[in-house]
Image (cartoon, rainbow, N blue to C red; front, top):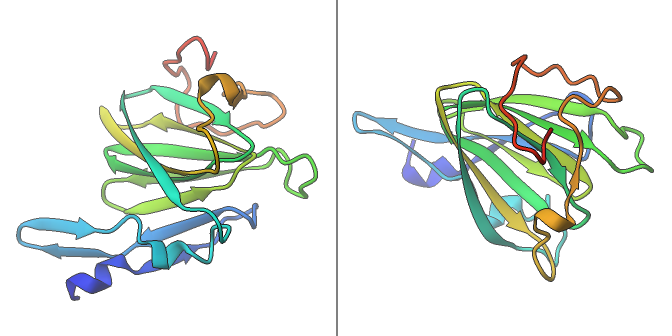
Length: 178
């Protein structure tokens, strides 16, 4: 495999939500380790609105059993992955007009399977840390100002309407996520 091919994407079909996209990345491995590309504009152009570009990156570091989310907003696209450790990524459809309203998808993402999830606006996004240490990366695309904490919607991690099968029983939560 040449280095150029390390930017290939394999679409993973979610089980329930058609508008949610997950991708397995191509990885180049050799005796030194591995290298892979998580984002290449040309590869993602068919999955984003035409006038939108990723403009903002964030990293989150968590300890085992930390659960962050469920959070979302009405305008931000997020490309999320786990670059170190292992997480359970959960995405919930919060579009009231959608056939899959309040349905969720769950993915195991780690630094070995090189999977990225493209989360559209009006979806809640959350993850729990399954390994001792986790580094989570999200790339954000939006028009206008960033929707920070005060502009986001928050859904309780164990909301009874959702019945999410989290892989941990007693998560570590901040006040916002309780």
